[in-house]
Length: 181
DNA sequence: TAGGCCATCTGGTCCT
DNA sequence: AGGACCAGATGGCCTA
Image (cartoon, rainbow, N blue to C red; front, side, top):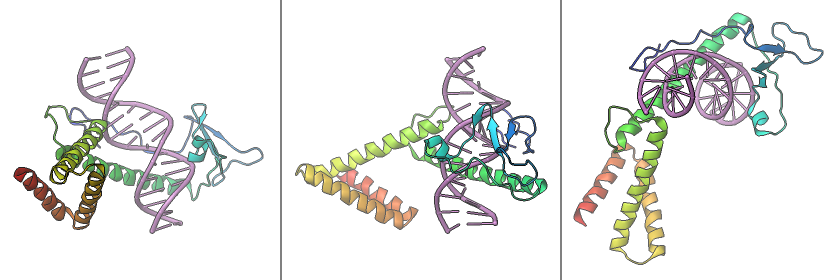
């Protein structure tokens, strides 16, 4: 059960077999029974596949339902749990990103979209600063700036391969360089 | 109360 | 085949 800090959010009802919430439709001529293929229409709209959404021909709206109701229930619950864990990991990564980017500290935490936007801007400004530093050492116009940019990328990739420690060394070097220049 | 943000569920598709 | 990934749907909480 999750908490958002300012209140407890109640989880939705565990997965249950479709009953009256949406209509079950079967292909003309097909029989509806356990394990048969069915299509689902929700709120008057098909919950189609990606191809369906994309407009390309739909492979099939129907899906084979494997196993008994109980087995499907168990698989669904396991799948839900995995998805929850995945989203938790994603949120942890967002939190790490929030802590990594400088921003005006307020009581309100950055939303996900704000975090991504600030991170993008932060990267851009760092890049501009670094390229500016390179340019001041080698003031030879655009081609030099391009060379600096590719060198920067090369260094970054190299330090990424060395892991987090290598990356922090790299950032320290940049910091020292900017102090010295 | 409307709108923004979020967590969770769900089913389709991709990947190993 | 099964797990990961993705996007739509849904409903709760919060704030202006």
